[in-house]
Image: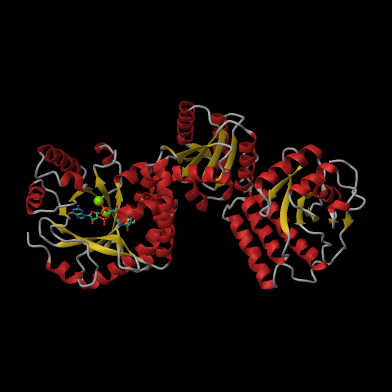
Length: 616
Ligand code: C2E
Ligand code: MG
Ligand code: MG
């Protein structure tokens, strides 16, 4: 920054900031401050939190556009951290300009530590021609820059307001800026202290988009954007002390930089997604890079003496200078989510199929979110028969999404969507509540029947999930007997280590856990010995071939033999006819479930059936 002052940039009048509540009435201001701090504590990127504050200032001071400009940790120069009212491309160019010349109204206010105002930049002789033309381009006629002075007296940056017309900042506007400035300073200090700052070598979302936009405009070459979803990190983040979370993110950043080299632009999209932009070399080069990233990030990370495994999946989208940076990132994000839904640990390209699906999917996602809010997802129950006695000793709780028009949507459709977006967590909570209520009711009306609840791999891999589950059922005063759990083999294999710990806790607490859809994942039979589970549900794919394919019978009897050796009970899923039921009984399977015995149905009136049993 140069030492020259801005003689005609007026020092804004001094005001007492305590006299007027400035960010709305005092209660609203307090609520807003809480919201901001809460979001920060929930690891929302600092840039996004700052954008919220700017937007708040814009509400209070109509007609202005607010920006937070911060001192860059690396260069010591100013750069925009939030500027929601401006075209990101313009901001990226302005930053380059500030970096180059080191001056401008904000730089000057930061250097001198006082508020500075320019009421009409066209008649302001102290502004350089470069600054003037830049402000012209940004449609800025008047500005007010307020330094963000930290408790130790150093200046972290400025909160700067811009107007498109000639404007003399009013006293109430200056007060608003002071109040908001305090909050921004607090946010920056908290972020720095908790380590929740965007690591210096990874940009925040807003900044990444700005830089990507500038890069795309500048370069003739197409650009490849890779979104890396770090499965497990979002879930860890809520539980771990933020120090561990951010240390983990730093290690991730290091590995990403190692694989992508110095020319890549790397950002943090949210607390579980890293985004990388680079020149789109040829397809094979991109594929190799994505494969290396996937392999590199799949290796466990050690932080604070603990080992953390993440489950990366990568989405790739390629665009040219005609494309919009935001759309390109969104496409890569959709590809990453699609890859995750297909099975984690994959690289997926954004292609025509996804392009068509994405509009549809967004609509469904919005509908699912609404359905969860309105408790439109409920449970039906499908009993299993104990094959030795014909008693319905268990009933599986199966989710059904009942649309307002009456249409029922299968969980095969919405559970994967809920899992890929994290909605499974609130949904799972709701459904567990319903299942607990039902188990309580049947403990009186059909006391020999236990309720079997499906758990998603996403839930199971959340640290603390099993503990909360146990506590919840205990609080309901149910005891452990009336509830059992099912976890699909695929979910278990994907999250083996974390999953195993959760299952162990459930088993130690006295719960029985069944491996669902057994035979569709990749577990080896030998692994059964080590897993804390009480039984297997043999996938319907095998059961349905029993009556026609001799090979299916060989496979199923091998599964039954191994399960027996480990004292695991077996259940046959998907029994649709008498012949299959007979074979299943001959093979010595313990329980049977299928449309032949009972269709999934609402719980109302089911107690009578449960008590009657099935006539074998
Ligand atoms: P699943 O746990 O293996 O559930 C059994 C599925 O097989 C159910 O489908 C059931 O309706 C179906 N089924 C039962 N008997 C027969 C039969 O004889 N023939 C055939 N063809 N199918 C039969 P549904 O209800 O569509 O559920 C699909 C999957 O969605 C479930 O498979 C489970 O993995 C998942 N799911 C359902 N409810 C929940 C839930 O509350 N939470 C979680 N995380 N997943 C759930
Ligand atoms: Mg199941
Ligand atoms: Mg199943």
